Amino acid sequence: MDWIETHKEGTVLQLHCQPGAKVTRVVGEHDGRLKIALHAPALENRANDALVQWLAQTVGVMRRDVELLSGQTGRKKRVLIRGVDSERIIAALNFPLKG
Image 1 (cartoon, rainbow, N blue to C red):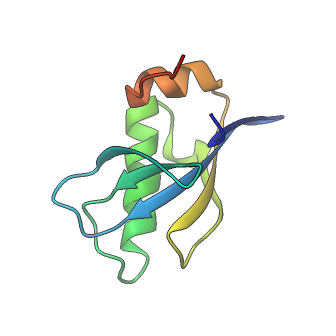
Image 2: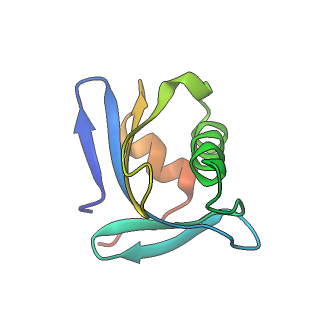
């Protein structure tokens, strides 16, 4: 999976985010990134805040352990989740492994 990588502080996710959806959820993969539909609109940083909060709750970490590294104003984002390995993230997101 190209969208997840090990980082010295945890794990980095390469995301494609779609704001304004009915519910926040993992949709699948898009262009080598994990696609996430976000309930929040892309206004006044609401979608970014919603993404960070949803990832923290879903993975089971504190909000401060989730950092948006890049993509603050676009759909393509890089997010660091500190102190968590990729297997835990994949399990928490309930994303099927291709094998």
